Length: 388
Image 1: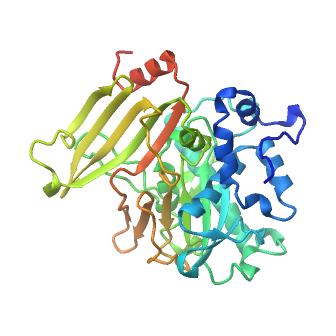
Image 2: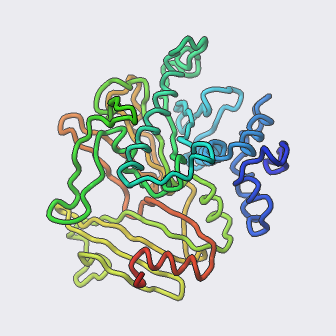
Image 3: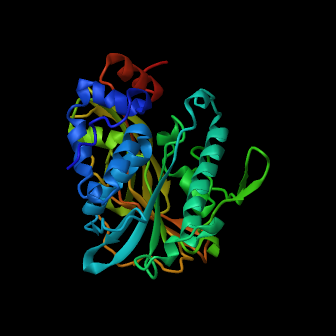
């Protein structure tokens, strides 16, 4: 297999992230992990050199494709690498076939990255970028703007589900957005209220305004305007950080997992499911914040860990979310068997509600940091363990 990390471009054209991980000896164990994700992907005729140069020059979009390539294996699928487009021509168990097109919302030029955004500006900007990228890929499928060979005309695409796999890399805050913005884009649902008597309530959002004042529709899976898209794959953790935790190198890890249990299954006196917010130190470098609230017949919440990487456990599919389009012309097979850590999202047309039967322990977000006292202090302060 070709070496992803043998520089193929002049130093000045190498992406900052690529240059850093190749030059820093602490990442030596991470590189073979990423190389293993490329199995099969570099066998495409005439495509391998192009892919390697894109990884070395733009980085994020190629990392997302590498993550997805390995994810297909863990989903029990194989990829037909003889087809150059869409990105992944997939065959699942029982010879079930579908197509996946990968895309990211990426960072602007370096000079523009210095601008800071309020939380509202970040969310509006991020949601608009996500929907713009989804629309671009839909146009490739439809053959808009005079495209000669739209995806819909390809024999291996016709009659099979078409999935867009998207990840946000558009700002330094992107990895902290959880699934709030993709919920807004696909189901027209605002982030939930986190405090007070309306905790958990989510307002509807019909549109957002661009900087020029033009409205852009949100909730594209609440009608048939994007009916060619069968589903969306989404993750904020299918990143370089995924390879870092899989490699086992020493890092600090901050992660959030969704928690849910039926009330009648809680043992009497259980501290794990105690309502409210609790902060616990479980070990020398193992800190846990638990959030719990009542939700009908269930107790819902989250576990937020700050811990040494030797204590953190994460599969490759942890953090992957799937959103199904109820208006899809070609619906994704509802009998497809998804691994337990994959979070599934549906939209109930009759009740106009987001149905999210996420498994207990589903990974919501994860970031990695250098294992230094300063980073640990900042993480503990920002999560309420120390007085700021």
